[in-house]
Image (cartoon, rainbow, N blue to C red; front, side, top):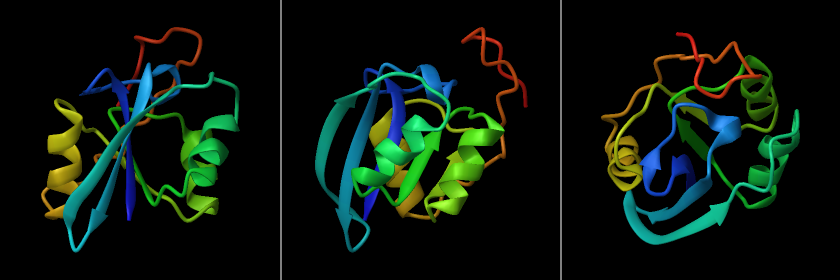
Length: 118
């Protein structure tokens, strides 16, 4: 399984599309076996879900995310977990152990990266 976490460095970002990078954690039997960072290739409507799908991602974790991106991830059968915060590796670990649940936090303002709503 591959879990991507939208990040600023190694910290979960609150705005998926404007993140600095994606930390990608590979797991086997609910244990993280590998960790890589991929720079965000750019925020264009509909692009990032397909980009992450091409990387083989099964789960995306973020603080907040727009409804359009969530819809595309759902169409691609990639699980979306929003409402996360803190260290990316801990978020991935908590997801694998069933301790991280999505809050459904949707970002409504795309023109300003710091204006996300619940």
